Length: 120
Image (cartoon, rainbow, N blue to C red; front, top):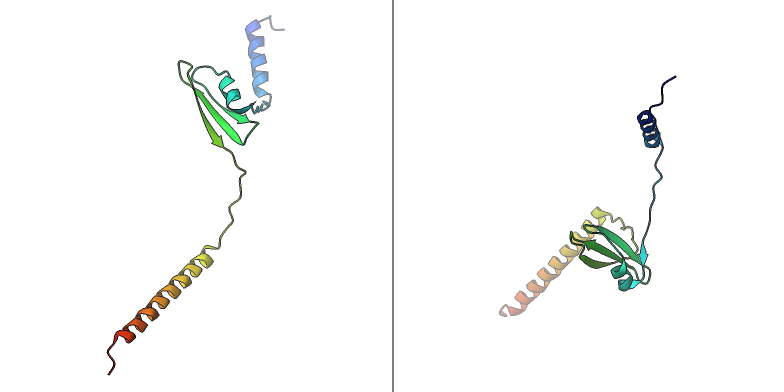
């Protein structure tokens, strides 16, 4: 057999860990209002999104190299799927509407000219 070699065991352990599937860990941090976002501790040169549990707001909290914190609030609204519009039909309707408007203006100007013409 092979003699005891701790570095060999360590490399085998690291190889086994690398080959195992990693479990994704997702964490949503919730805070209570602006005071909760201000109280959240964050290290220098960091940023985090904090979900406000009192209103539909997400807080973007950032710190600079010295650890000074800045915060911005963003409103959240539920995503709505865009309705697909038949572009050709919409374009045809717009053209028809423009044609009607132009024809109406032409008929109004021709009536004005006829009224302003001197009677013979």
